[in-house]
Length: 399
Image (cartoon, rainbow, N blue to C red; front, side, top):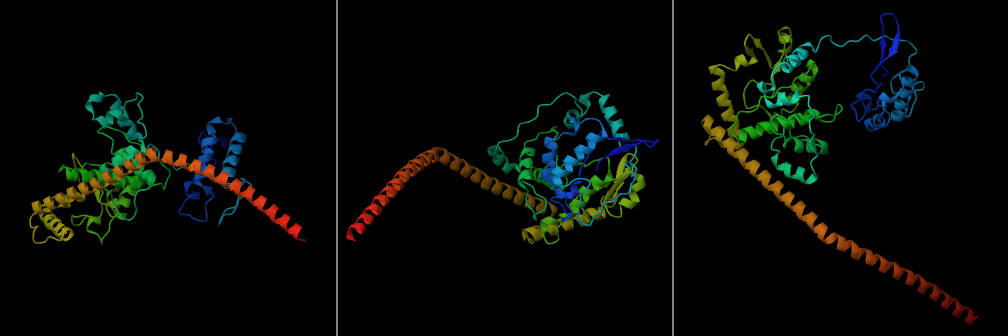
């Protein structure tokens, strides 16, 4: 895609935005067979060929686009061939379809925050809107990441474990403190939503173990799709075959709720658990949950789920018994998990100490043996030559 700007007078000028290749056309992608190249090649090109370095004219823009396509796909713009697509000589005008004024309320919020004293806000907001330069934390060493593994207690869903990069990011997150701003960046499909699941579940498990109220987690964006993608992803981790893979409250379809404007409430409520403003209070689907009838129904259902999970129907009768039993189970699992991880870390430390202590000597002895072997091999070759000559002499003398 080579972006440009078309004026009302019909003049086409180049854009400040660099040409790009859509993420879905770069492997790995769900559009297998349609990819133009790999994401690795695309990132490699962006790191060595900067769009900001080119001259401000169409010729330079086209040359840059040719280099980009050539590096990623090995083809040129004029001869590009892709599966199930044909080149067209026609011209198309695609009008800008961005939502106008989508950030107007964010701008008002920033202006309000800027004009008030920072002491009026919590640490997170103060950090976000403090324009002074920050000291970036250092990347944790492998040893410190292993130690932090024991502080990671929650995981949402069991089908897939964390990737190496997700695990490394989580080990940094567990070190964060109140007020920290933790930024996670990555192209589509690299597991940011899965990482978000892990963060949420980890915070909830820790709150439950400490017998604290769980945190209120807000996902916000200037477009609804980003928010609904997160809510939809919560539904994907539901597992009806597992007691731990579902809500222990009746009549709930998701782990998240959706706060929308009044105009979109009816449409959104058909699919999501929706909240809306009722003057000074928040209402919506939670109105049905804040009744005596629902609370009693929820108590009975939670007790039933606890009985099934712990297989202790006769010992768990009241809600307090159920809560205490689950708390003991969580504390026991967390303790066992920490013990296992601490032992693994101790073994890793012992292995490293053994390597530092003995591997240099082993390598030295190995090198000495290799040298001795080379000497013996050379002597053997010399002896073979002497023996061969001796046999030939005897053979000639005999005749």
